[in-house]
Amino acid sequence: MRNIVLDNNIIIDVLSQERRAKYPASKRAYEFIIGNPNYQGFISASSLDNIEFVLYSEFKKSLQMSNREINLLIKITIQELLKDLKIAKTPSYIEIDFDDIEDSQIIYSAIANDARVLTRDMQMLDKYKNITIHPESFFKVTGDNESIPFLDLKYVNTRYSSELEKAIDEVINGGWYIQGSRCKQFEQNFANYCGTKHCIGVANGLDALILILRAYQELGAMNIGDEVIVPANTYIASILAISANNMIPILVEPNLNNYLIDVDKIEQAITAKTKAIMVVHLYGQITPMAKVWELANKYNLKVIEDSAQSHGAYYQEKRSGNLSDASGFSFYPGKNLGAIGDGGAVTTNDDQLDYTIRALANYGSEVKYKNMYKGINSRLDELQAAILDVKLAKLDPDTEKRRVIARMYREQITNPKISLPQVELGADSHVWHVFVVRTANRDEFQKYLTENRIGTVIHYPTPPHKQEAYKELNHLSLPISEQIHREVISLPISPVQTIEQTQYVIDVVNKY
Image 1 (cartoon, rainbow, N blue to C red):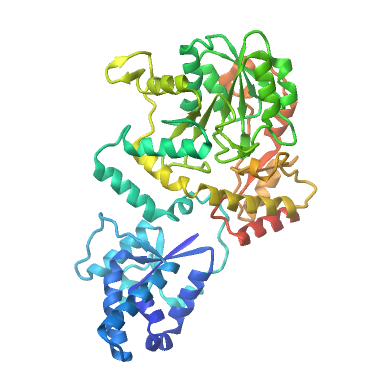
Image 2 (cartoon, one colour):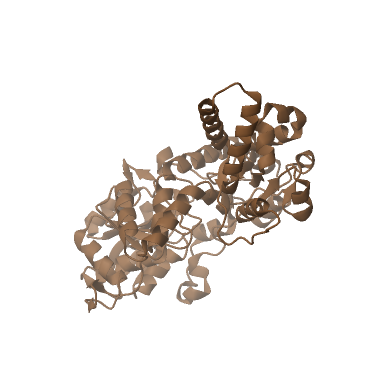
């Protein structure tokens, strides 16, 4: 994504009939920027007053209208302008150039948004050579040779920069930064979103899982040395949470079609020491839960969801986070619902579990300075809660954008050397946190994509049972999991990825 801040003279060139004829390159560049999904146009907040003043002069000179009519026309004109452009906030930390205060404001607005300034101002062009560009030169540098990032996280967030900045300002000005109203508001909204009675904001996704198991120990439902069934194919955090509570992870092989725990292999792993089944909705796809619920009822086991990658996914008209006794979420920045920092949450319908986790995450204290448990400090702060609340309102539309890209990949990638992910439970069961394919020569394939300017990530190169941290599990032979970790590679997918970019990826993959 290329960001362009439009100088005042460019805006007036576009809006003024007289100047439009005189400076056609300005209009041509403007129309290219607002019409190209790979570009985002901005106008500096500091420019609005000046534009209004110049427009008044232009309209007064060329139009036979009353002052009231001109002011109304200016209002409508600027409203229409802001449908195409975002306002770039002028940062408070700028170094004022007293030779041209307005220019320095525009330049720092561009710097804050990783943008260039489109301008005809020769003085500005000469003084800020690396940041500015003239409309006549603009089309010489617009060749589409940029890479397709695996995830353009900056643009994911800057789409909502004004709303995020407002939320952040409100927190800063409110003067309460831990366990305040913004966290309570987000907890309620996220609980409503998931369909659960409770949501507890915590510091990160790993803590969410750790706290669930720890709370069950405090409530007497589990003990040190008990076993928890968990997928062998997962990010290591799922297993770390079990180990952190001095419990035993029992690894079960995945289904090669969907990469999720093979529900038909769970029962044979159950022993007298088994106390819970932890399912991982890996890559954004819901685990087939009916069999899991059946086994949990049969053997009196708790069901725990690792929902770190599955925000908003459905199973039988219920969302991820409401398919178990308790669920752990991550809000790591790259997640479908990501903070600008770290964060996590537990969702549950269990009142007692909610009470216990809240206390454990707050130094073991429900009432200040009265400690019931040897707890930890794991709390979602007000800033991240406010940010997440803004982004939660955008989550479902963003998920639909991911599904469009996933559908294009699955329908149009036809290369027989590439194994595509399977969806077995319906379109709404997968939120496509990542789009994972398999290929026998992964390193070669990744090198080929890199040479064609396509970003990729491997989720995950080494299975947990082969990690140094789990020497005690290194002897295990889990061939399906090992094959997955050896062959998987993730293609770019995000709500800001364009159809053109997606089509380019498809074409390159098919030529491999």
